[in-house]
Length: 112
Length: 112
DNA sequence: ACCGATACCTAGACCTGACAGGGATAGAGC
DNA sequence: GCTCTATCCCTGTCAGGTCTAGGTATCGGT
Image 1 (tube, rainbow over the protein chains, first blue to last red):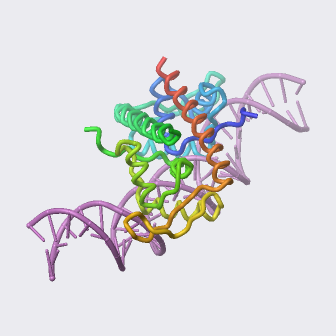
Image 2: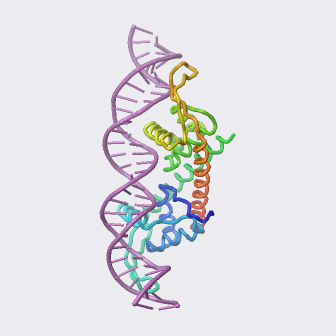
Image 3: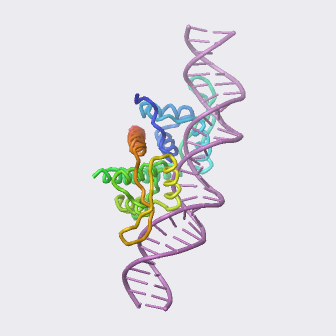
C-alpha cells in the first residue's frame, strides 16, 4: 500500500530541479524521469508544475536552455544550470537542511 | 549568522500544530511560543498564518477549542486535539517522513 | 490502425503562508 | 501616573506554488 507517490514537499521543486541540472543537462521530461527514478518512484513531478517552474527559473537566470535533438532524433529543449543557479542551489540546499532539521527536532521533542 | 529564522517548510504548519497539541492543550499564542522554543528559535510561526490555520483545522474537526483563563487570569482560547486530529497527525507525519526521505535521497544521489 | 511512451505547453482552480494591519489587557520600569 | 514590552486575539489581502485537466505532436511496437 506504500507505492503511492508521496506528495512533493511544497517549495522543494526548484531545489530538486537545480540539483538535477547540476549533475548534467536534461530536457524537461528527462528531469521528471530522473527525479522519479532516483526517488524510487516516491516522488512524481507533474508536468503542470514542472514547466511553469522551469519557465520561472529561466527568467530568474538560474538555468538556460536550447533546442537540441534527443538520441532518438526528436527535438527537445535541453536545460543547463548557470553560475547564478549554482549559487541559488547552494542557498536553497542549506535552507532546506536547516528547515527540516528544525522541524524534525520539534516533532521529536514533542514526543517526549 | 545562523540565528535568522529558517523559512517554514510549506505544508508543515498543520503538522507542527497537531504535534504540539498531541502533547497537551495550548492557546494559539502558546502554540507559537512552544514551536519557537523547541526549534531553538529556528522556526517562527506568524500569527497571520497561525490563526487562519487553527480556524481551518477546527472546521475539519481535527481540533476543538474553548475559552479558559490563563494562569495569569486572562481569557484565552485553548485548543485540544480530537480523535480525528490524531489520525490526521499520524497520516501527515508519515507522509512528511517519506517525503523528506525521498527528497534527501535524490539530493544525495545527485552528488555521486 | 491503434496505443503507450516521449516530449512540450497553458489555463484555471486551489491552498497555503506571509504581510500588514487592528484591538485589548497585564506587568515592569521609570 | 506613564510608557513600553509581552501576552493574547483576529481579519483582509496578497503572492506564490502546485495540481488538475486539458491540448498538441512524434515515435515505436503490435
